[in-house]
Image 1 (cartoon, one colour):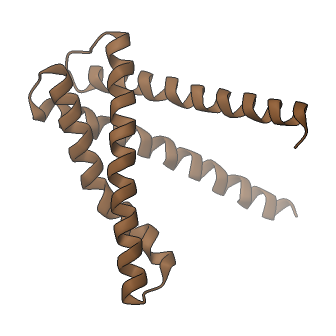
Image 2 (cartoon, one colour):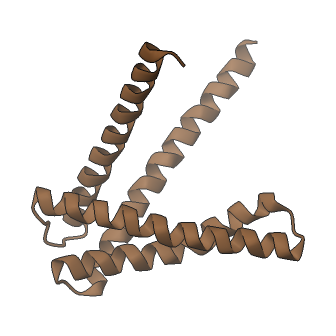
Length: 145
C-alpha cells in the first residue's frame, strides 16, 4: 500500500472500531435500563466496556487456543474447533461479563447476569434480523435472475 491508501485504510479501521465501541457502550447502558439495574454514568460505562472487552478477549482467546490444540492432538477436523470454542465460550463470556459488571459497580452478581442476558438477546435479535434480510435479498435475486 502506498501512503494515501494506507492512511485511508487506517482511518476507515479507526472509524469502524470507534463505531463498534460506541455501539457497545450504548447497548450496555440500554441493557442496564431494560434489566432495571441502576445505570452507571457514561464514563464508568466506558470503563466497564473496556475492561469487559479486554478480559473476555483474553479468556475466550485462551479457551479457543486450548480447544484448537485439543483438536490437533486428537486428530479431529479443525473446522469443528471454532464451533466448539464458540459454544464453550458462551458460559465463560457470561461469567466474566457478569462478574466484572457486578464487581465494578458493587452490585449483586444477579444484576450483572441480567444485564448480560438482555444484551445478548438484543444482539441475537439484531443478527437474526440481518440474516433474514440477507436471505430475502438472495431469494429476490434468484427470483429476478
